Length: 130
Image (cartoon, rainbow, N blue to C red; front, side, top):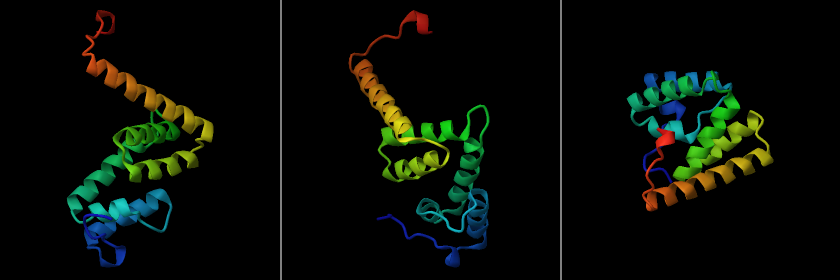
């Protein structure tokens, strides 16, 4: 359950509706997901987050699938159920297979394990890596 009341389109201010309209146009959909409805309680955060996300997730040197899989990996590491669900769906739309998901999560799990071991043992970074 959200810690704030979700702002539905019908009750949104003109500023929030403008962002919602851009989200729907950009994503070619007729709805706004709960994440955006929750952060709409603070319109400056809604606008800033949407504009930054839109900019970062646009294909560039990395294609859309790679960006979605990276987002999914970080979301899994951070334990964000909402983002895991959202970016799994998006990555699948961009072509992620079950096999790719399995390998991605294996890498995430291994990276988290070795990161914790390196931190726990306070391993000094090798000169060759500097």
